[in-house]
Amino acid sequence: MNTNSLVSIDDISRDEILDLIERARFFEEHPNHKILDGKVVATLFFEPSTRTRLSFETAVNRLGGRIIGFSDASTTSSSKGETLKDTIKMVSNYVDLIIMRHYLEGAARYATEVTETPVINAGDGANQHPSQTMLDLYSIYKTQGTLENLTITMVGDLKYGRTVHSLLMALRYFNPTFRFVACDELRMPKEYRDFCDANGIRYTEHTEFDAEVLADTDILYMTRVQRERFSDIMEYERVKNLYTLRNDMLEDTKPNLRVLHPLPRVNEIDRDVDDNPKAYYFEQARNGLFARQAIICKALGIDIYKEAES
Amino acid sequence: MTQNKKELAVAALRNGTVIDRVPCGALFQAVRILGIEKMTNNVTIGNNLSSRHLGTKGIIKVADVEFPEDVLNRIALIAPHAKINIIRDYEVVEKRPVALPDEIVGIVRCGNPKCITNNEPMRTRFWVTDRDNVTIRCHYCGHTVKAGDAIID
Image (cartoon, rainbow over all chains, first blue to last red; front, top):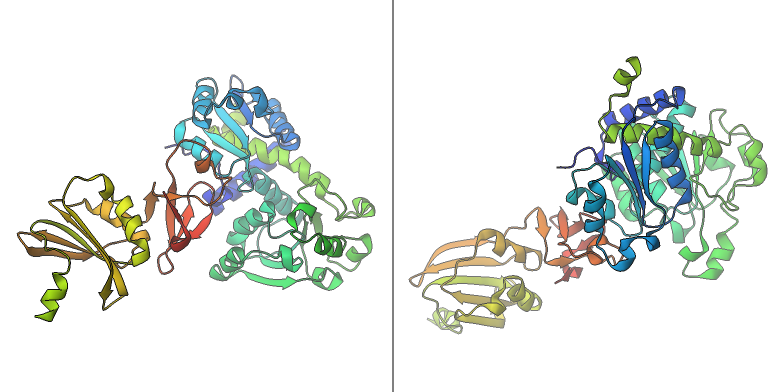
């Protein structure tokens, strides 16, 4: 069984999340810790994702490992009709770790079933993207000093946004309170509201995005409302500016509030928010590097603290 | 006596398996799942028979075959109240309900066109997440479907 792989945030326990956060903190202090000497890592990007690939490749490079791979499947044998299984089996012969992005949902889970080489899921369609969730968790931990008992307000596309779903699932261990802010068409799906009910997680739902909903918020998690998600374009035109964060909305919020966004941002956060000390989305992206260094070392079974002493 | 006549509406079996209380709409799916179409044994299939429990029901009798339990349990997805009768020398020697397994391998096709299982030559895997409403979840993409709406291959 392929046990070191990271396919979904649901696969890891509370202790493993906290351990990964500790490791991320270690890498923030020692970003160029060369512990992957002699290791070769494959980055297999069956669909392009420049941001994620650069982050993972920077992580490997800073750890002193080497990288092979591709950033677009059109240049590989899969365009000739090779199965995913065959590609994974072939690459497994060469590398110590596979980091893969795929346009099909469940691709990473399947990959772990055909190889003993550990696999890190760097996103499989609309399904899972656990390294994004780990960087969100690390960002929350860093800015709040804890993951426990926080009020998290999620705004925008709560229906299709995989980052908000994964974050919600991961926070189940930490007694959160959620405020879900979205229009009816992009409301948090029933399956996740049921999940909250079943796990005793408090939540409230709002269609108005105003100062009131932000009053007790610790983390404001913004997402992009995308035109293609709407069956009714008129509805999109009506709501597209209702879920935009303006700088003045942050005036009376808690001093510890931080604004997160998985990026790319379009117009859901006004540009003048960028200079507000409560804006955290660019630092959040930087935390992705440390979170991914932690995930890579865990997948390879490397004891980073022991290696640091020697 | 009338009761006996009713039972004999479908030919009695000397040895073999009777699968009773199959919902009418699921009968032919059950036949396919069990691979009965390819069998050369004596097979009797009845449908729209009156049933005290279901109103109407389907029934499958296969002579000289006793299916492994895990094979029979595959039909629990579409016929959760089906009853299995094992017949030896005209006697019912065993009578039991089908049991829904925790995991369903093959049989069901994932309804998500972007699921890896619909794009790669591989077997599907589902987990039963809700026994009361017979709901299953794709092991790969997480897509959830009620068994009644599931696409059976």
